[in-house]
Image (cartoon, rainbow, N blue to C red):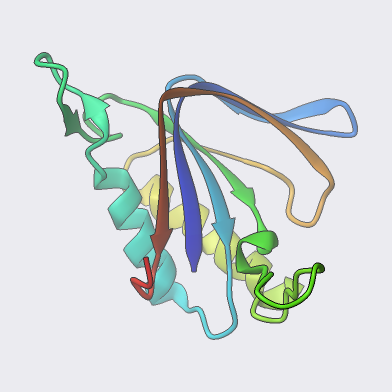
Length: 149
């Protein structure tokens, strides 16, 4: 399971012109589910994201977690995180999980993150979405449950 985490002052997602999710301060999480991912992968990333210390403390150091700053998360399903563009010019998405198991793990991940006390807003799985954000810092991190990066 892969995630792109962006520290934001606000983020929102719309589907067909209707806002379906929005947060103020927190993380925009783009989440990709790969073949073979399990609930353990989702639990690992949920715990990591809830406790990731990238918010500034009084001294201006990245020392506070999402829980410490009472932030929220907007989680967007993003199968293209498993795109492989090493060959040719058109990415292959063969490493992405099929829709049914990917949706189950996406929903599970959102619930696991919420279980840590993080308010979670969501996109719509498999929908064409428009995502807007204000990236603070900018701070953007890549996470992988298999610790490839």
